[in-house]
Picture 1 (cartoon, rainbow, N blue to C red):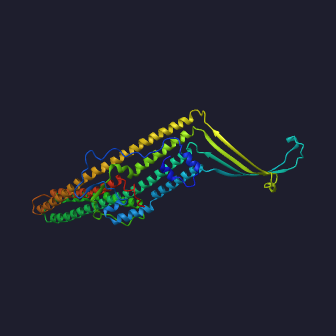
Picture 2: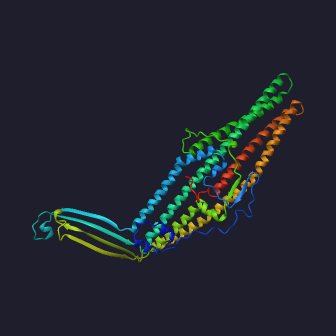
Picture 3: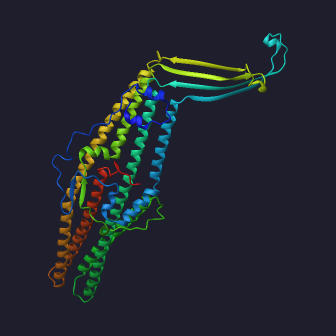
Length: 481
């Protein structure tokens, strides 16, 4: 029996149960050791640069989303934490698991029942071969029955241990749900800001194209330009306008997603709207030690709890193959009339002990034990898989942020260059140095560069949020709700 289990034991558990727990059969669970690695990537992780750096050994805050400096995002996540049906379901699952554990712990106490029998009888002389006169008579019995099964091999203890571990798994799943809810809202808000920026950039280009078309149409009327120039500009304007419906549809859908994540119906919507300028790029990024990651990730802790539950069930299966001791007692009174029930001489009692040793059940109990052992091996393998995937998530996030820093720098440079080029070709067009087709190509290049810059900045924010989530979101040691 582990000391951790003793601390969880209810104060009212009989002393006999605690003593029997000392000889509980089956494996005793031990928390797996951290993986023997000291970094997330093959080489030492370099900071992204371009305004961000990793702080090795630092752990994420439970309210990591406040690092983005958006009060609107903070308020929306706080609201969602209170209104989310997903979190309500997770809390209900914890309560159900806790009551299942308490119900199983009831086997440590004697089972007490009251039995009351009342009958009115008429015996036939011929049927009973009795010389007594056939007269109706009553028979009343009131008794208390007590049954107690000794937990000699710790079967009940292991059952409660398994159910406690399942409750711990539900707690970790609730933490995972909280973390993912915050992450999904942050990602959705960033995506909305990205789409809003792309819509604004496209509308600006449409406005410029409309102004240019109006000017060309006037020039065409005076014979200053060719008809092909007007057609070229009309085509460019139509193509720019064609981009808007898709972007606006995606923006509306993102708003619906934010409403749903906040626990609202789409028709209710959310008041807050998001733009990239409202977000502050977190400068100092936490980078937990690899040995701490397994303590911070809810999915890894869930897998650990599943191993604990499976190991306890092996003990339950082993105990089922060993002798089972039950003590029972009954006491009460019986009489032929209710008024005589409590008179001297009507009382009775019985005390009995029962030992059952399974001998041959067609290998059923042996196969159940082997099945429990195989399930334990499965849980251990799933735990190792969860740990490997956790390290993979962190490594991917680190690589993404390093690439994002370069992508944002390149995208900003490309946008600045394309904007400058567009200004020059427009000036040259006014002087007759270039054709209208050159201007159209320059406008397309500028729109592409502007949207690429917006998407690169949004991706950097999203990947920053992904790093916080990959590190466990601070839920391993802190509570945010």
